Image (cartoon, rainbow, N blue to C red; front, top):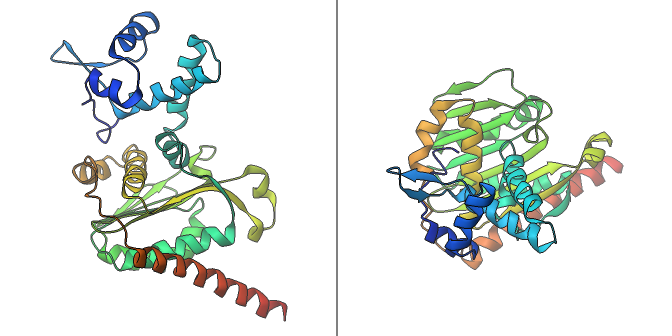
Length: 288
């Protein structure tokens, strides 16, 4: 558990969020040791958002017909699988968010649109997962511009070591972890929100570079984006504790949601399409 997921929920809060009566939660705790609340002042049960996610995953496992013991294991395993992954963490928090199969060209187009839009919205928390340091080096001029107006900028790749430069952090990923195979852009600003989180399909990684394929989720929903920021901050703070110190106050609370206007949504979509059209023209020119 991180400071971004504090134990503040009462058993009544958990019952409301999960649809499981408080009496049933107490019975499960006694019989299965799950959920395992923290105790406020030694007496009052307190739970985290992560506890709720594990309970909901367990509930889905029961609906699939698993016996209670295996359902509990399934819920706990789902939470553990999300602890080193932006994709798994966001999927656990938002199971209804569509997962799309996107080729690299679409990932680049969405990333470019997010980065371009973020340039017009200062004082944001910006996150990028690049897999390889070479990929970050290619994007570094754009991210250097973003760092000029961001309040905090966090990048993940196979960097040799953690590094901080003012408001920017480079966080190394460990080979073999889920995060090492992920591509993400998260833009959490005071007045605009957008994110793209994807994981490379393993068998597709052996294809030619331009044919790489990703399972991906993207959203302009402030609540989804805030969760993506919290996951990234927790992953980064595990390596660079000072990052957590900087971001905890900013990310503990939900954003002040303002519905996107039709014009803003259309402008973002047009940026995606412009990038795709530009890539198509470049490819056509090479083939001419």
